[in-house]
Length: 389
Ligand code: SOE
Image (tube, rainbow, N blue to C red; front, side, top):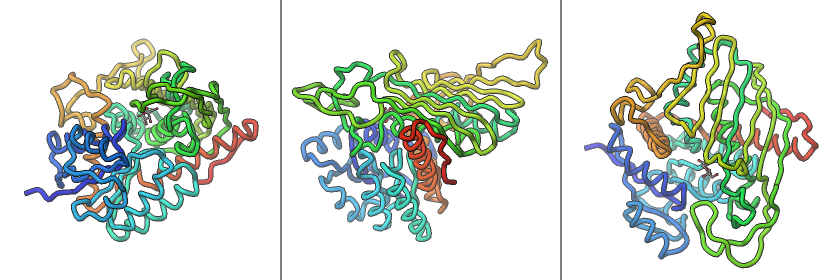
């Protein structure tokens, strides 16, 4: 019998649902060393959390996250709440001896992220593990991109170009949500989606962002208050609320290996729904990825004769590609939810092996420092801002 790993999930909206499917699905497709048990789902509203538990497959519910930490059937706490509660919940869970998976960005401030990284380092000495949910690392094409760079197929990295483009609040009538409140979300497009491309480009290149010069903008400063919650924006109701975060972030950066970088994160790119676009140019080759065509990685091999060289469209659906072998026959493709499943696989495997999973809370803190550098730069008229390493 495979030993079990009892999971307590806190939050059941968009991310809670995505994590739920991952915990449910992972043992059906991957040979896991520990079998995840969906022990308990926590949320404040008793009726809504009960309905969500029924729908998403959780055995029990709690209305106070602290009770989750006291339960013997919980070995791991999965934090899918807005950023303002990450630090308190994650630190308490680690101190209670529970492994932690925490949604991104790790926290709302560098100070909170530092406290979390310290708690994670202390817990690791007791065999208690932690991971931050930069889920897109687990898209097979991203894994292949990292492999190509690590194998030297791109040579010296010169340029990193990254965009994360969405449009779900381009309409000024789209209502307020917690993602538009600084107190709850920490920042706007910057932390919500810009954090992903900072993490992804660092993951692919194996290098770190060392400095930035930034612009932040809030295009729509007042929005209708929501009458009812929805997946992202909800339904508009009476009265107006104030948007206290950035709608868009644009910044230049330098990487530790000398590459020049540009980053753009916006929720106002009409027609772009979840376009994570990354292009890397090196001395020996280039690669390009777009999440809206997520089973493809484009690769240009600069060592081929110019007469026949050209961007190659690699369909990342072969059994030898990262994670793909556990799924469908070649060519059948994966989707958004699979990366969450892969995240569970890697986390559970690391826990069983007694290893620290990645991305760690220390990795989450490093990304938080980049986000903070972007905010400080923008506040200082785009002044060049070094990122503490
Ligand atoms: C909303 O912008 C959002 O759900 C992000 O919060 C997620 O991290 C991203 O995966 C999809 O978009």
